[in-house]
Image (cartoon, rainbow, N blue to C red; front, side):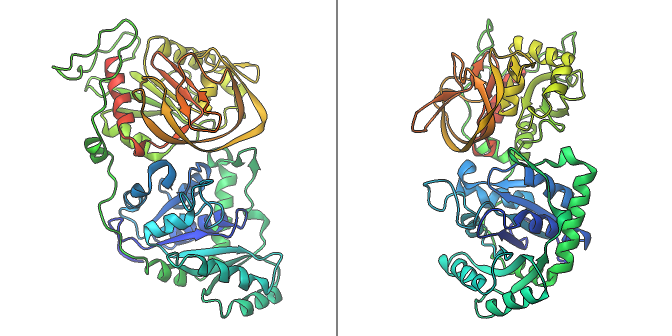
Length: 492
């Protein structure tokens, strides 16, 4: 075990594959857990916008799973965000997305695992599903090794190998390819993770079953892979330059946001005296804390598992006290709540339970009616609607939501149509859509975003202090979003 690094010099590996379904999550999660069991402080990362895999990574390592997305955050932030997450760790494991060279549609290598590996100067371990091939595996691996000379494929892990004889044939074929075999995994039903309409079932919903699955992954990787060789390969990663990302520094270095637009009936802040101080506590317990830090309540629990760790860090750096609440269980918002953030997840799976918690639905509606800031993404949007699949929700938005057969998926370039608690009109951000639900109407009289899609559609709702949209965004790309939101919490 090596000494903990600053993040820039931490040994690291990227776990990639020729295609989706090859076993990246099993290998990456199992490797994280196996190394953690041997005493390594492991930093877990995931390429792309996926929220679910990082939950398994966190379970395997005891650390927050973090995303590295060159589309959402920009290529220039990949290494700083990595260094931030890896600070103090002995080794980092980065799980790729899709096939090694697959990225944003029509954008070349942008947001691909290959691009992230290059930005991190990290060696790649290729996980190959060998279940239906023998000697042909050499041609496959040879192609990936030579496709981009800047991507260093340092080893191969063969997955779903049927027998000792099958393994022998595969090893013989790969002898001359130039990427050593660092692991061979047999089929193992116990490491299969259940899926549903948007992918794997999140860790928060599986509890003990998820723990057992991660343990099985760790046992399989520990028994079938050469951990010493993998660690040695990780230590061959090139040094990264520049400082790690820091939420406080990001807020300081980002352009100052325009003063937040006033709540209905309120006077705008005086630009000569600066932002208003903390407002006093109100009798109903809303309004912040005595020390002047507004309370931002962030939805969590099994229904709302989709959130990037940097969002809470930015809110805290902007001066908020971030408190988590569970809309499935909590009947009240945290004491002193000044604003609410409701991220993504699976409210459609828990619609009846969310609907049954009438007390909390009313509290959120009351808060929104007062003009307090409420930011909702995807699942949060559904929760704020009048109903979801016929069951009453918060009723903050005059819209209904329902499950659909159609999957809406992809990166989006977006522009803020008007001023909101998150951004002034004209702000450009990149986001990601991923849902099988439909909201009708799809946009309010004041939409949240205009999307640069072929149909140039608008979507989402801006009403008072509410910003609700299907679009998942990564606030590290625009730290002013968090600062603007917290400032509105102070002044609303």
